Length: 172
Image (tube, rainbow, N blue to C red):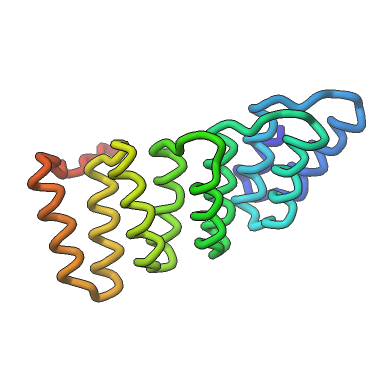
């Protein structure tokens, strides 16, 4: 129910359902927290998402996992808090994976923030979690910001590493 409300932009209803669940004595699990954080992200409920994330480790004694960090980075990034999202990635208790870093890189694309994008891409490359799409997204962020030379350098770097961009295909 929580995830369904969240996917349809009904973040407040998702959180009401979460609160009723807690009041009824149910203990939230990792999936429930992902649904809540994702709902907050899609509804733009930044402060509520922060509150739930803090409750996980505090009130519920539940250690956040990569998927929870990914939701929080997405939440902060979508709202434009790119530096805060990047700081969260840098201070995580575990090594960020491509999902966490990709969420931040996508937000950098939305806001055309080349500084945080470059730092995020550096993390991706150093953690060996970079894929062709990461290089292309960074290149596109540079291009959208008018930094054509930087865009070309990223594409050349991808090519020299043997990464190839495959054309998309869709059947409707």
